Length: 270
Image (tube, rainbow, N blue to C red; front, top):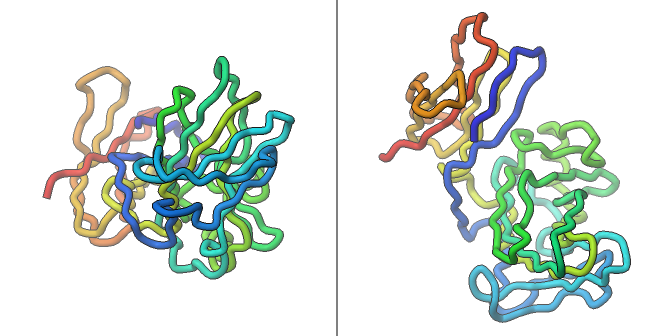
């Protein structure tokens, strides 16, 4: 992922996925034997159906859309409710699949919702499940480094204190399963609330200085590169860092005459 950094007096935040890893940690549902307490709400009167095969891999759950209006969600079971304060800073992971009828006619809505009483944290996935029926993996950090919003997608970005407060008393957790206007079927697998951050989950938080905030596994080595254009073979090394803490801040002493730069983090072998 490459993002130009304009010289404007406001912070920019982006996540830089270097690879994808799923670890069975934290609170998880892998649907090996049953639906693990998951239900459905919204435009899905038939509810959740457990499938012993067809998952990613193994079993999974699916919901068939009633196609009568509204948006349906997968609703987490009781094991995801209560105090999960220890998952702050870790990852929420899950796999989604959608099977549509006819041509793609996708619509936007809140993709992930975490609730604590009247407080709602919502997240808009930057990419959606593909319309060709393939499984897709999703990872979201449970911290202010991700683009969690308060109340709605148009609300303010959630602060550290707000995210920690919700995780300390989760009263609702739902994942959107319906993306198509019209008839469709959604599938869910491998849900983990509180999966450890791995080197593949490195994120860069960029502010106006610019300060690059690298988050990954302590002890890993990353090379930070920059480029002033999108042309091939223009990447130059800024620095190489070994994470002694996470997050780890790297300052780029970029001249004030530079209007924009692109940055990337490259995980180096041990």
